[in-house]
Image 1 (cartoon, rainbow, N blue to C red):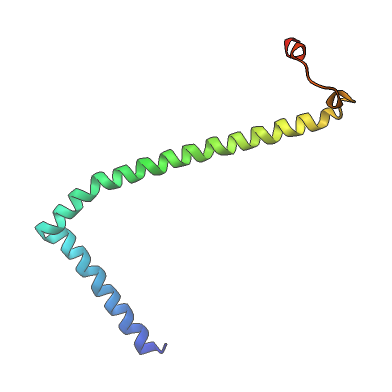
Image 2 (image 1 turned 90 degrees about the horizontal axis):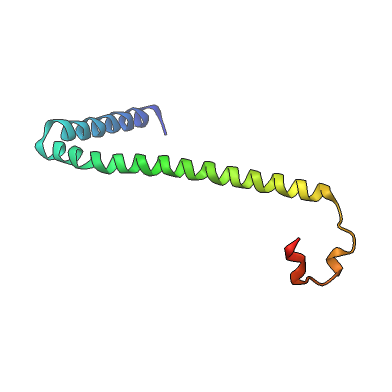
Length: 93
């Protein structure tokens, strides 16, 4: 793309952005659109905050699982206990 095309593209992009802002802030329809969008944007923000909280809980759960796995793996083998059948009396101990 040559220099002249780049300049024309920038001017047209700037004009489109300016027209969009003018519509939103200078016309009744644009103001109504902004007023209607505000509650929706508030909801999107709440959803994103909830998503961040959920992601943090998932990270914590994964980290706890990793630590538990490492702790169990460090205990080593339990001998031949895994080869013996489980009985209900085993659960009482």
